[in-house]
Image (cartoon, rainbow, N blue to C red; front, side, top):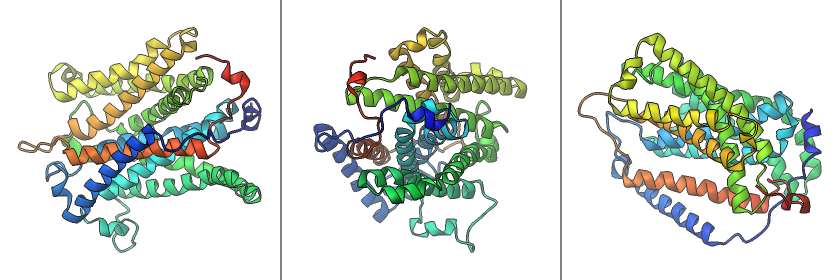
Length: 393
């Protein structure tokens, strides 16, 4: 089935409409304002005034969650685009725009977090300056790819805005070039997601053996694709509940099935690697990394047994719980690798400050608020039809 053919079986996207000022949007706005207040102090008085980062832990939750885990959750954008446009799976086309919005916001959140985390934020332009840039650095590749991918996502999002404004001629011209943009958009995340794993490889013995491996780039990339599909499934489930739309469990279950296969591959490769390196005994030696290791692998395994039969994949509750477990497992894996398994020596400790948590919660609130406004004002979700309204979840 072609991508174009897949579109014919679903209603065209349309703005949802409805009130923009609600209890939910006001609450989210207050969280964003709290974040702005903390950031004002951070940018004036420095990192020490608002964070618990130190010489032993030069990064904290802003990097571990907002960048490393956040971009993995946003991986649904490139992974869904790969399914639809590269592998020609047109049945997933209705998920493209919701996945694109989530990816754009996730990567913008990552970019903002890096700016918050830079000590000398006024020198951020050094990243790409020929006089200062370090092309041999893993972080250079990550930074350049994320910046480039945000630009790509903005271009991919333009047709949605143009459609809303009625700029059909301009949208038609842009659509002729989108195949190149989409191809680049699929490539870039595979580069920097694997490089996030490479960053831990560079740290060597500072990373606990259960998490340290030369194949971390493969593990990070494989899990990112699966987590991205889980995030898209969760987005579809939550929007159906929040907007009282039918839960498209059939298409979302098919999407999650792809992620389920990747998670199974991830688990096989990860345990094989640990056995090969002879560190499996540490999985039974009480420590914080041991606890997170088993917890995240359990969460990854939930879809394997919860959706083991064709009948189970028709149950909306099982699809939702499987996607939630997979997403939480991915977030925990990345945060544990960058914070729990990271040990720079005796005497150094880290736990996020109230200011850091406020900024992280504020960024999430901003993302949710933007999604709410976007689906009400822009053609993101397929239009509800009388036939679809009669379906149950």
